[in-house]
Length: 55
Image 1 (cartoon, rainbow, N blue to C red):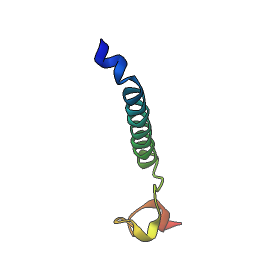
Image 2: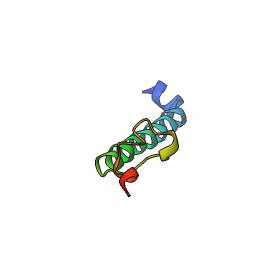
Image 3: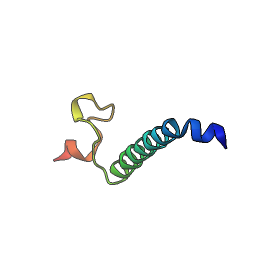
């Protein structure tokens, strides 16, 4: 218990960073499922095959 109290600030910051990473990954997955780009078409490996190239 003493170790947790001594490192509480580090644990909280680590949990906040982990939450941010998980939310970013979830957003990327959701965008991919909805057919949205996460970056841009010029750098995409599927540039000629996605729905954006048909528009």
